[in-house]
Length: 137
Ligand SMILES: O=C(CO)[C@H](O)[C@H](O)COP(=O)(O)O
Image (cartoon, rainbow, N blue to C red; front, side, top):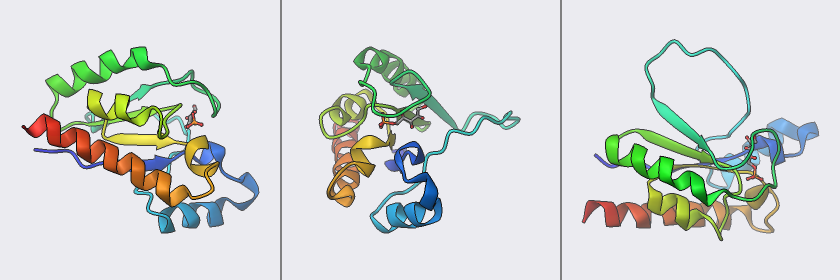
């Protein structure tokens, strides 16, 4: 079973005064999900694991490649689990996360700060799909 790529622009990087239009804009540009930092208590079995690739709390931080070991181990053990990475992801870092096995990509500043956010969303998705081809072979 191959998990599908899910690209999730982080609303932390959006215009908070216009959240509804920012959300519509991202979906219209090709986003699958929107990422919002909300803490809740979970009672359900695990559906997705999030590996933070920056310190939680704010956008625009540097990607931590050392977190990819966790992603790799999780992907080896759980081939059909949604594995999300969050922080510092964009065109220059996505291949590290995708090749480690992440399929859900949270990206804030690289999407909201891009002149063409749709191109970044598409690039992130393509990178995950391309990496998944190498897993299948
Ligand atoms: O949840 C977050 C921090 O807690 C943000 O989603 C994360 O930092 C994404 O921002 P960027 O892509 O700019 O690093």
